[in-house]
Image (cartoon, rainbow, N blue to C red; front, side, top):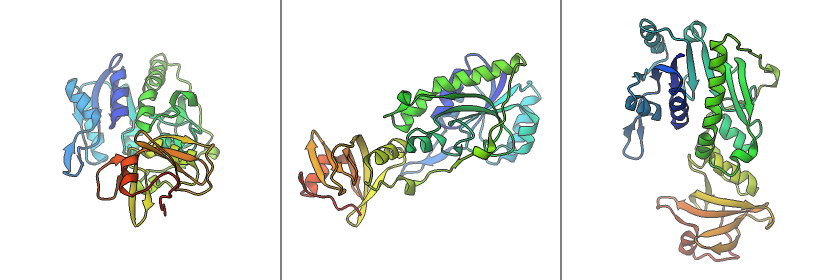
Length: 311
């Protein structure tokens, strides 16, 4: 089929790569290049990089209204049979939704977790409502009719960080989209309305969501898996201590006091929560470089049995 692909991050790029094997991608529409790192060097979205490497026309409109003109120009040469949207990052205008078949791959079992962070939110909630949905887009926020849906077993993605989870979901996403596109081609697409009264929502996550309170070890571990790419952190003394790597959690070391050093071995340390404990591999103190947990404890003259003063 002739498709136009909307998407931005690595997950979208990997979905696009799969779709190009069976479909004619007329064009890619993605977000503008954005400054990255301390030096604020412009970085292209992964979708753009893939498009350029494979000679697929790529557009990066600054405004949503510009998308309409881009699609008109494409349509002057080709028939657009479907638009695929995967983590694009902008809401499409009514003029686009009403004119074309627009399909969105969403990272939850809709109507649960409509919004910007369904996969991360699901991980933080112990993989509740975990799966993928393809919807026939309407003007609402992830409220369109469901064209295909698939629950994904927790065992497939547990103990993976969010980047690994996204990668694991790629074949499922491609398979669902291929099914829907084939149904459209065969005129056998069966749409099912969402149960709107059961809808729940999630928002774009920020650094404030990455705070680890060291109350429950499993909850903290899930937050690290979901948000470690942003940078999980806690308060330590008068500053911020970034928790750079958590290897595992335990529930059988109940200290009922957070911050107690229960064990130190091979660069890592077991630190108590109010319920359970965390095996922490590395941290980044405020205004310092990343270091192993054992190096950090040595710098603070702390040993097994001592307590880190988490606020």
